Amino acid sequence: MLLEVEKIDTYYGIFQAIFQVSLELDKGEVVCLLGRNGAGKTTALTSIIGLNRPRSGCIKYKSLEITGKKPFQIVRLGIGFIPEDRALKKTWS
Image (cartoon, rainbow, N blue to C red):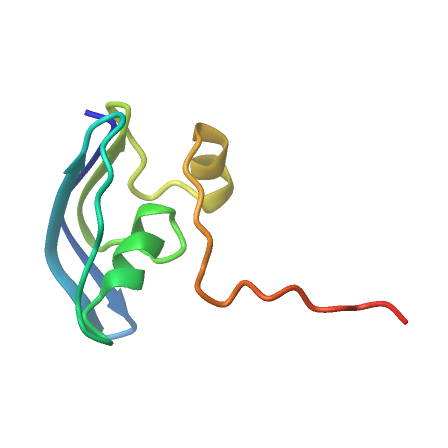
């Protein structure tokens, strides 16, 4: 198994954004998260990459537990994320 997400719960402050989310992804497999606005798709992805740490559950990448690791540690393992708002802004004159 390449990626295993087991029953993660993620919060924003006291607001629980996702409840018991689980998924499995094998090497070479393509998976799509679908749902209406506010359903938790982005929160699930940011939980996997360490931007929003789940309060419970387990995330494994190549059988290595990555739950609670910092985003830079997860990126070094080979997981990346391109957010919806990825516009490049000119910062020079």
